[in-house]
Image (cartoon, rainbow, N blue to C red):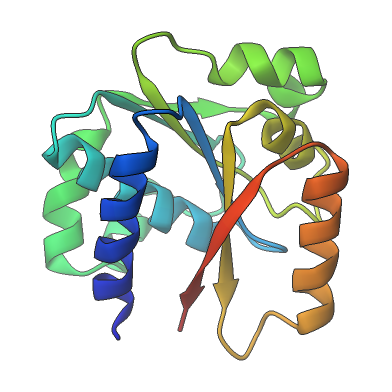
Length: 170
């Protein structure tokens, strides 16, 4: 199954869960670039189903919007072109405590999808994980080690986050 097809299946499952969820955190064990791509795709899919969403991405992202668009497929570029208006950035300091993290992703009447830095690299991701209703891990095929994945899961759960699944990226 291709990454696009697996993300479509995931989005259909998330649509069902989003009736009960208000905040989804998308993160990875180490790097954040893939988490941003997956979070953008999820937001585009939810919006296509008329679910009001806001996307939060780390301000310290190494990838600019233009670079991100250049590395995505034309279909995904078309879907994410309209995300900029409601896309918001955050700094690690804004999510630096559990209380701040809750405030950051609280948005009544809106589903918040937040892309976070890697949980093993930035402790603010764990605060966001605890504040979110669900956490989705993005894992790189042939790059993410089993030890990193296990450690990320343990840290998310120890912080009080609810891990609901993973997306495998090639």
